[in-house]
Length: 356
Image (tube, rainbow, N blue to C red; front, side, top):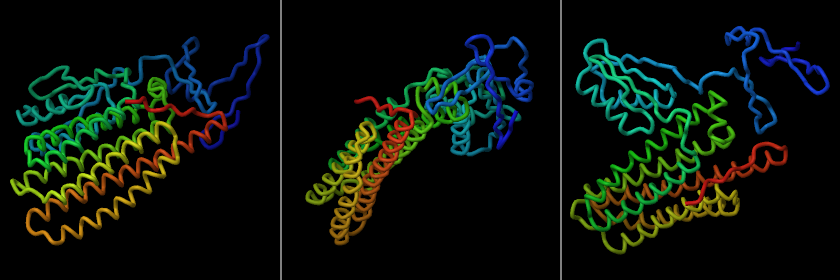
Protein backbone atom coordinates (compact mmCIF):
# COMPACT_ATOMS: atom_id res chain seq x y z
CA UNK A 1 0.00 0.00 0.00
CA UNK A 2 1.13 3.55 -0.73
CA UNK A 3 -0.21 6.63 1.05
CA UNK A 4 0.42 10.23 0.05
CA UNK A 5 -1.36 13.48 0.80
CA UNK A 6 -4.36 11.72 2.35
CA UNK A 7 -4.76 9.35 -0.62
CA UNK A 8 -4.37 5.60 -0.15
CA UNK A 9 -2.88 3.57 -2.98
CA UNK A 10 -3.90 -0.05 -3.63
CA UNK A 11 -2.79 -2.35 -6.39
CA UNK A 12 -5.49 -3.84 -8.60
CA UNK A 13 -5.53 -7.63 -8.37
CA UNK A 14 -7.19 -10.11 -10.67
CA UNK A 15 -9.08 -13.08 -9.41
CA UNK A 16 -10.68 -15.69 -11.61
CA UNK A 17 -11.03 -15.01 -15.29
CA UNK A 18 -12.44 -11.49 -15.37
CA UNK A 19 -12.85 -10.09 -11.86
CA UNK A 20 -10.66 -7.30 -10.51
CA UNK A 21 -10.46 -6.55 -6.78
CA UNK A 22 -8.96 -3.76 -4.65
CA UNK A 23 -8.49 -3.95 -0.88
CA UNK A 24 -9.96 -1.23 1.36
CA UNK A 25 -8.06 0.78 4.01
CA UNK A 26 -8.72 -0.82 7.41
CA UNK A 27 -9.12 2.56 9.15
CA UNK A 28 -11.92 3.55 6.77
CA UNK A 29 -13.73 0.23 7.24
CA UNK A 30 -13.56 0.34 11.04
CA UNK A 31 -14.45 4.04 11.21
CA UNK A 32 -17.62 3.36 9.21
CA UNK A 33 -18.48 0.38 11.43
CA UNK A 34 -18.37 -2.03 8.48
CA UNK A 35 -17.66 -5.72 8.51
CA UNK A 36 -17.33 -8.62 6.09
CA UNK A 37 -20.53 -9.14 4.11
CA UNK A 38 -21.66 -5.50 4.18
CA UNK A 39 -22.53 -3.93 0.83
CA UNK A 40 -20.66 -0.98 -0.68
CA UNK A 41 -22.04 1.25 -3.41
CA UNK A 42 -19.96 2.66 -6.26
CA UNK A 43 -20.70 5.87 -8.13
CA UNK A 44 -18.72 6.63 -11.32
CA UNK A 45 -17.87 10.34 -11.61
CA UNK A 46 -17.76 12.35 -14.80
CA UNK A 47 -14.05 13.06 -14.27
CA UNK A 48 -13.30 9.32 -14.43
CA UNK A 49 -12.98 8.78 -10.67
CA UNK A 50 -15.05 6.39 -8.59
CA UNK A 51 -16.78 7.22 -5.29
CA UNK A 52 -17.29 4.43 -2.75
CA UNK A 53 -19.76 4.63 0.13
CA UNK A 54 -21.55 2.23 2.42
CA UNK A 55 -25.13 1.13 1.73
CA UNK A 56 -27.37 2.99 4.17
CA UNK A 57 -30.28 5.41 4.22
CA UNK A 58 -30.39 8.44 1.95
CA UNK A 59 -27.90 11.17 2.70
CA UNK A 60 -28.59 12.65 6.10
CA UNK A 61 -31.56 10.39 6.97
CA UNK A 62 -32.31 10.50 10.68
CA UNK A 63 -29.80 13.26 11.36
CA UNK A 64 -31.24 15.61 14.00
CA UNK A 65 -29.80 18.91 15.06
CA UNK A 66 -30.86 20.87 18.13
CA UNK A 67 -30.16 24.56 18.57
CA UNK A 68 -30.76 26.56 21.73
CA UNK A 69 -32.13 30.07 21.25
CA UNK A 70 -33.41 32.73 23.65
CA UNK A 71 -36.67 34.59 23.67
CA UNK A 72 -34.65 37.80 23.82
CA UNK A 73 -33.10 37.26 20.37
CA UNK A 74 -34.05 39.85 17.80
CA UNK A 75 -36.43 38.33 15.27
CA UNK A 76 -34.11 39.13 12.34
CA UNK A 77 -31.19 37.46 14.11
CA UNK A 78 -33.24 34.35 14.83
CA UNK A 79 -34.52 34.18 11.26
CA UNK A 80 -30.97 34.45 9.86
CA UNK A 81 -29.83 31.65 12.18
CA UNK A 82 -32.67 29.45 10.95
CA UNK A 83 -31.76 30.19 7.32
CA UNK A 84 -28.16 29.17 8.04
CA UNK A 85 -29.35 25.92 9.64
CA UNK A 86 -31.60 25.30 6.63
CA UNK A 87 -28.70 25.76 4.21
CA UNK A 88 -26.56 23.42 6.35
CA UNK A 89 -29.17 20.80 5.56
CA UNK A 90 -30.15 18.86 8.70
CA UNK A 91 -33.32 16.84 7.90
CA UNK A 92 -34.64 17.41 11.44
CA UNK A 93 -34.09 20.71 13.23
CA UNK A 94 -35.21 21.23 16.83
CA UNK A 95 -35.41 24.87 17.92
CA UNK A 96 -35.39 24.95 21.72
CA UNK A 97 -35.48 27.58 24.48
CA UNK A 98 -34.26 27.10 28.06
CA UNK A 99 -37.74 27.89 29.40
CA UNK A 100 -41.16 28.30 27.82
CA UNK A 101 -40.88 29.54 24.23
CA UNK A 102 -42.44 32.98 23.83
CA UNK A 103 -45.17 33.67 21.29
CA UNK A 104 -42.81 36.00 19.40
CA UNK A 105 -40.08 33.36 19.07
CA UNK A 106 -42.62 30.75 18.01
CA UNK A 107 -44.03 33.12 15.38
CA UNK A 108 -40.57 33.60 13.87
CA UNK A 109 -40.07 29.82 13.63
CA UNK A 110 -43.50 29.33 12.10
CA UNK A 111 -42.95 32.17 9.65
CA UNK A 112 -39.63 30.65 8.66
CA UNK A 113 -41.27 27.28 7.93
CA UNK A 114 -43.93 28.96 5.80
CA UNK A 115 -41.44 30.93 3.72
CA UNK A 116 -38.92 28.19 2.95
CA UNK A 117 -39.05 25.25 0.54
CA UNK A 118 -39.05 21.99 2.50
CA UNK A 119 -39.33 22.68 6.26
CA UNK A 120 -42.61 21.69 7.90
CA UNK A 121 -43.46 21.76 11.59
CA UNK A 122 -43.34 18.16 12.81
CA UNK A 123 -44.09 18.72 16.48
CA UNK A 124 -44.36 21.47 19.08
CA UNK A 125 -43.98 21.57 22.84
CA UNK A 126 -43.86 24.30 25.47
CA UNK A 127 -40.16 24.92 24.91
CA UNK A 128 -39.44 23.56 21.42
CA UNK A 129 -40.48 23.36 17.78
CA UNK A 130 -39.23 20.52 15.56
CA UNK A 131 -38.95 21.13 11.82
CA UNK A 132 -38.63 18.38 9.22
CA UNK A 133 -37.33 18.86 5.68
CA UNK A 134 -40.00 17.14 3.60
CA UNK A 135 -38.17 17.75 0.30
CA UNK A 136 -35.26 15.61 1.44
CA UNK A 137 -33.56 13.57 -1.24
CA UNK A 138 -36.03 14.53 -3.99
CA UNK A 139 -34.72 17.95 -5.01
CA UNK A 140 -36.24 20.23 -7.61
CA UNK A 141 -33.98 20.50 -10.69
CA UNK A 142 -31.64 23.42 -10.05
CA UNK A 143 -31.60 24.61 -13.71
CA UNK A 144 -35.40 24.87 -13.62
CA UNK A 145 -35.23 26.83 -10.36
CA UNK A 146 -32.84 29.28 -12.04
CA UNK A 147 -35.31 29.78 -14.88
CA UNK A 148 -38.12 30.34 -12.39
CA UNK A 149 -36.02 32.92 -10.54
CA UNK A 150 -35.35 34.76 -13.78
CA UNK A 151 -39.05 34.89 -14.64
CA UNK A 152 -39.84 36.34 -11.23
CA UNK A 153 -37.01 38.89 -11.32
CA UNK A 154 -38.00 40.02 -14.82
CA UNK A 155 -41.61 40.55 -13.66
CA UNK A 156 -40.42 42.42 -10.56
CA UNK A 157 -38.31 44.77 -12.70
CA UNK A 158 -41.22 45.46 -15.04
CA UNK A 159 -43.70 46.07 -12.22
CA UNK A 160 -41.29 48.27 -10.25
CA UNK A 161 -40.96 50.62 -13.22
CA UNK A 162 -44.74 50.53 -13.79
CA UNK A 163 -45.29 51.52 -10.15
CA UNK A 164 -42.84 54.40 -10.60
CA UNK A 165 -44.55 55.64 -13.78
CA UNK A 166 -48.06 55.44 -12.33
CA UNK A 167 -47.22 56.44 -8.73
CA UNK A 168 -48.96 53.18 -7.74
CA UNK A 169 -48.05 52.23 -4.16
CA UNK A 170 -50.00 48.96 -4.29
CA UNK A 171 -47.91 47.62 -7.18
CA UNK A 172 -44.74 48.77 -5.43
CA UNK A 173 -45.68 46.91 -2.25
CA UNK A 174 -46.44 43.77 -4.26
CA UNK A 175 -42.93 43.92 -5.76
CA UNK A 176 -41.48 44.09 -2.24
CA UNK A 177 -43.53 41.06 -1.14
CA UNK A 178 -42.41 38.98 -4.13
CA UNK A 179 -38.78 39.43 -3.13
CA UNK A 180 -39.37 36.69 -0.54
CA UNK A 181 -40.13 34.24 -3.35
CA UNK A 182 -36.80 34.95 -5.00
CA UNK A 183 -34.97 34.72 -1.67
CA UNK A 184 -36.43 31.35 -0.82
CA UNK A 185 -35.49 29.91 -4.22
CA UNK A 186 -31.94 31.23 -3.74
CA UNK A 187 -31.72 29.68 -0.26
CA UNK A 188 -33.07 26.41 -1.66
CA UNK A 189 -30.30 26.31 -4.28
CA UNK A 190 -27.72 27.11 -1.59
CA UNK A 191 -29.00 24.20 0.49
CA UNK A 192 -28.93 21.76 -2.41
CA UNK A 193 -25.42 22.77 -3.50
CA UNK A 194 -24.15 22.57 0.10
CA UNK A 195 -25.59 19.06 0.37
CA UNK A 196 -24.03 18.09 -2.98
CA UNK A 197 -20.61 19.30 -1.86
CA UNK A 198 -20.92 17.22 1.31
CA UNK A 199 -22.40 14.01 -0.11
CA UNK A 200 -21.94 12.51 -3.56
CA UNK A 201 -25.37 10.87 -3.38
CA UNK A 202 -27.04 14.26 -3.42
CA UNK A 203 -24.81 15.28 -6.31
CA UNK A 204 -25.93 12.18 -8.20
CA UNK A 205 -29.60 12.96 -7.48
CA UNK A 206 -29.15 16.49 -8.77
CA UNK A 207 -27.71 15.15 -12.02
CA UNK A 208 -25.03 17.87 -12.05
CA UNK A 209 -21.28 18.11 -11.78
CA UNK A 210 -19.60 20.14 -9.03
CA UNK A 211 -18.57 22.90 -11.50
CA UNK A 212 -22.19 23.12 -12.67
CA UNK A 213 -23.41 23.39 -9.08
CA UNK A 214 -21.00 26.27 -8.51
CA UNK A 215 -22.13 27.99 -11.70
CA UNK A 216 -25.81 27.79 -10.83
CA UNK A 217 -25.19 29.00 -7.29
CA UNK A 218 -23.35 32.04 -8.67
CA UNK A 219 -26.18 32.67 -11.14
CA UNK A 220 -28.72 32.39 -8.33
CA UNK A 221 -26.87 35.01 -6.29
CA UNK A 222 -26.82 37.41 -9.25
CA UNK A 223 -30.60 37.03 -9.72
CA UNK A 224 -31.21 37.54 -5.99
CA UNK A 225 -29.20 40.78 -6.08
CA UNK A 226 -31.11 42.09 -9.09
CA UNK A 227 -34.39 41.35 -7.29
CA UNK A 228 -33.13 43.46 -4.37
CA UNK A 229 -32.63 46.38 -6.76
CA UNK A 230 -36.16 45.96 -8.13
CA UNK A 231 -37.34 46.27 -4.52
CA UNK A 232 -35.23 49.40 -4.10
CA UNK A 233 -36.85 50.97 -7.17
CA UNK A 234 -40.30 50.06 -5.84
CA UNK A 235 -39.37 51.63 -2.52
CA UNK A 236 -38.92 55.04 -4.13
CA UNK A 237 -42.63 55.17 -5.05
CA UNK A 238 -43.72 55.86 -1.47
CA UNK A 239 -40.81 58.26 -1.05
CA UNK A 240 -41.97 60.36 -4.00
CA UNK A 241 -45.64 60.28 -3.02
CA UNK A 242 -47.68 62.11 -5.65
CA UNK A 243 -44.64 63.91 -7.04
CA UNK A 244 -44.57 62.62 -10.60
CA UNK A 245 -41.18 62.63 -12.40
CA UNK A 246 -41.00 64.56 -15.71
CA UNK A 247 -42.17 62.43 -18.66
CA UNK A 248 -38.90 62.81 -20.68
CA UNK A 249 -36.85 61.70 -17.70
CA UNK A 250 -39.16 58.75 -17.06
CA UNK A 251 -38.79 57.78 -20.71
CA UNK A 252 -35.01 57.66 -20.37
CA UNK A 253 -35.22 55.61 -17.18
CA UNK A 254 -37.66 53.22 -18.88
CA UNK A 255 -35.25 52.78 -21.78
CA UNK A 256 -32.42 52.07 -19.35
CA UNK A 257 -34.59 49.57 -17.47
CA UNK A 258 -35.47 47.82 -20.73
CA UNK A 259 -31.80 47.57 -21.68
CA UNK A 260 -30.92 46.13 -18.26
CA UNK A 261 -33.72 43.54 -18.53
CA UNK A 262 -32.62 42.50 -22.04
CA UNK A 263 -29.03 42.20 -20.82
CA UNK A 264 -30.13 39.85 -18.07
CA UNK A 265 -32.16 37.67 -20.46
CA UNK A 266 -29.27 37.52 -22.94
CA UNK A 267 -26.80 36.70 -20.18
CA UNK A 268 -28.95 33.76 -19.10
CA UNK A 269 -29.31 32.67 -22.73
CA UNK A 270 -25.53 32.76 -23.09
CA UNK A 271 -25.30 30.47 -20.05
CA UNK A 272 -27.78 28.07 -21.68
CA UNK A 273 -26.17 28.10 -25.13
CA UNK A 274 -22.52 28.59 -24.20
CA UNK A 275 -22.55 31.56 -26.59
CA UNK A 276 -19.38 33.55 -25.89
CA UNK A 277 -20.29 36.22 -28.45
CA UNK A 278 -23.62 36.93 -26.78
CA UNK A 279 -21.99 36.98 -23.34
CA UNK A 280 -19.36 39.47 -24.50
CA UNK A 281 -22.10 41.64 -26.03
CA UNK A 282 -23.83 41.79 -22.62
CA UNK A 283 -20.60 42.88 -20.94
CA UNK A 284 -19.98 45.54 -23.58
CA UNK A 285 -23.58 46.70 -23.25
CA UNK A 286 -23.14 47.27 -19.50
CA UNK A 287 -20.50 49.87 -20.30
CA UNK A 288 -22.97 51.60 -22.65
CA UNK A 289 -25.60 51.64 -19.89
CA UNK A 290 -22.99 53.21 -17.62
CA UNK A 291 -22.58 56.07 -20.10
CA UNK A 292 -26.36 56.43 -20.28
CA UNK A 293 -26.40 56.74 -16.49
CA UNK A 294 -23.94 59.64 -16.63
CA UNK A 295 -26.20 61.49 -19.06
CA UNK A 296 -29.29 61.04 -16.88
CA UNK A 297 -27.31 61.98 -13.78
CA UNK A 298 -26.46 65.33 -15.31
CA UNK A 299 -30.17 65.94 -15.88
CA UNK A 300 -30.92 64.98 -12.29
CA UNK A 301 -28.42 67.53 -11.02
CA UNK A 302 -30.94 70.24 -11.97
CA UNK A 303 -33.63 68.70 -9.72
CA UNK A 304 -34.06 69.23 -6.01
CA UNK A 305 -35.57 67.55 -2.96
CA UNK A 306 -37.27 64.15 -2.84
CA UNK A 307 -37.52 63.90 -6.61
CA UNK A 308 -33.75 64.16 -7.08
CA UNK A 309 -33.01 61.69 -4.27
CA UNK A 310 -35.64 59.13 -5.35
CA UNK A 311 -34.67 59.14 -9.01
CA UNK A 312 -30.98 58.90 -8.07
CA UNK A 313 -31.83 55.66 -6.23
CA UNK A 314 -33.68 54.39 -9.29
CA UNK A 315 -30.80 55.31 -11.57
CA UNK A 316 -28.22 53.59 -9.38
CA UNK A 317 -30.32 50.42 -9.12
CA UNK A 318 -30.81 50.23 -12.88
CA UNK A 319 -27.08 50.57 -13.42
CA UNK A 320 -26.31 47.94 -10.77
CA UNK A 321 -28.85 45.57 -12.39
CA UNK A 322 -27.08 45.96 -15.74
CA UNK A 323 -23.71 45.26 -14.18
CA UNK A 324 -25.05 42.21 -12.35
CA UNK A 325 -26.24 40.95 -15.76
CA UNK A 326 -22.66 41.55 -16.91
CA UNK A 327 -21.45 39.42 -13.98
CA UNK A 328 -23.78 36.64 -15.11
CA UNK A 329 -22.35 36.90 -18.63
CA UNK A 330 -18.85 36.44 -17.19
CA UNK A 331 -20.08 33.39 -15.30
CA UNK A 332 -21.47 32.07 -18.62
CA UNK A 333 -18.10 32.55 -20.32
CA UNK A 334 -16.26 30.75 -17.53
CA UNK A 335 -18.79 27.93 -17.57
CA UNK A 336 -18.61 27.54 -21.34
CA UNK A 337 -14.82 27.38 -21.35
CA UNK A 338 -14.82 24.92 -18.45
CA UNK A 339 -17.32 22.75 -20.34
CA UNK A 340 -15.18 22.76 -23.50
CA UNK A 341 -12.08 21.89 -21.51
CA UNK A 342 -13.93 19.01 -19.83
CA UNK A 343 -15.17 17.67 -23.16
CA UNK A 344 -11.65 17.61 -24.53
CA UNK A 345 -10.54 15.49 -21.57
CA UNK A 346 -13.64 13.31 -21.43
CA UNK A 347 -14.98 15.16 -18.39
CA UNK A 348 -18.44 16.53 -17.57
CA UNK A 349 -20.77 17.52 -20.38
CA UNK A 350 -22.56 20.88 -20.19
CA UNK A 351 -26.25 20.53 -19.33
CA UNK A 352 -28.25 23.55 -20.50
CA UNK A 353 -30.81 25.35 -18.39
CA UNK A 354 -34.29 24.36 -19.66
CA UNK A 355 -35.96 26.98 -21.84
CA UNK A 356 -38.83 29.09 -20.49
